[in-house]
Length: 71
Image 1 (spheres, rainbow, N blue to C red):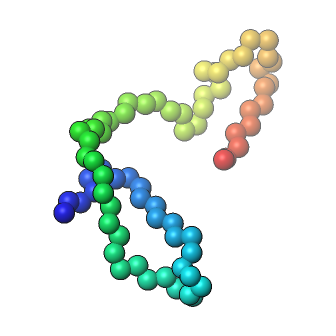
Image 2 (image 1 turned 60 degrees about the vertical axis):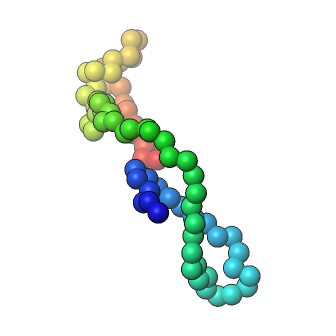
Image 3 (image 1 turned 180 degrees about the vertical axis):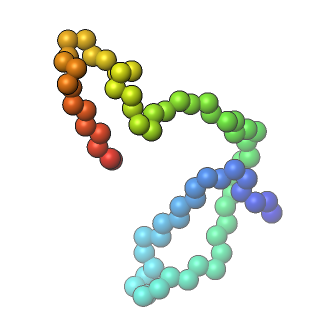
């Protein structure tokens, strides 16, 4: 028996429980093949607050309006 190393998310969805109000799960067995995948740090650059002078668009006026919507 080993634990699940480097598992970020594990979602289990049970579609039916044969009409009962609650579902009791007594055992879940997981089988698979281990890998030698090693997670590495990712170097990234992002803008929490964009600097408009870094995003010039040719032919646009200086009074351009930008809209950022949350997803």
